[in-house]
Image (tube, rainbow, N blue to C red; front, side, top):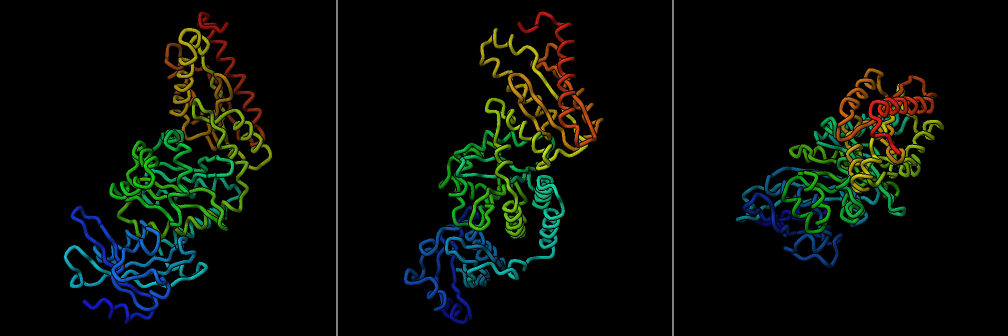
Length: 459
């Protein structure tokens, strides 16, 4: 086959690439077989015929996936991406060549591209009606609400539904302060909380992401083959992914004006729609990055990162910040809201009989029980053996039902025994009053407990 003649007939920079098809249904070496004069001029003296592509440009997993799909699966593809490794935007067309051009286990395709120094809005907008509609809905949600936190939660839920994934999450990362925290998260299953997965999101993992992403516009893992490739460069992260049961993921950096804010993290998505979803996620990440950059999130990051190390729920400083933000209107608790105070019965006796390690285990189990009943709400360890739950946008019957269920599972004789008090209001100005009332109700419940069981009274 006259590959040189094919590329010479193209009006823009063009090359024929070969993809080695392996017996396990994946790919091996990807080579640039022939290129025209425009391609060679752009790439410079380092180019030579039949070279492995990664000798010329940095290895790019997403590009390799497109190469495989085009050359082996014979899919005609187009992508307009931020090629950070070359500091340009690339408008690339992937055109499969006839099977007659293939040689043994080598499959071929024609790659044609143009560079733009800055993003071309018309090319970015050149997507399907379905994707455009979804992205427009995202923009309307972001701009149509006065409550930033509420709009971000709505968007992350929409992303989960659109990608048909198990979880979608935005994680804010402040490298200078060495802090990180989830901003918003949505799960396909009820009763699951981000706290369940925080043990897998260790500092070693989170602060490795930016380097692992590197100059790529995103990182996509669609199967075990990709996971094994990732393991070669970041084994610590892959170990945590496997521990959390993640089979596929998309990690898209949230950058604006060259500042790195965090990542959009999607796990176990519909890999059959990977091409469509990649475009949707790319465009959505651009708007999310812009919206995040337009909001002062440093205080909010401080609030979210104040986690009680022992139990994994938020600590007293975080609770105080939450109340202050409600009062000053920065981050209001949606009405109607409920408040729950839960104080452990018997912690001192547990410490006395089993030592502080036994007491620590009791506190951990107490937090787990609260997550079981209030996992979708805001849980704080207010100090010692006292926990507080804030329930935004909660109906009174929902609050009462959850409190009764918690009491039923934490009565005398249970592994975790709570004294519980609650209060509810439709008035946004009543948050502190509700907390006071819930606290009083909890102490009344504790007094009744010790009247019935004086042998457990703290000395």
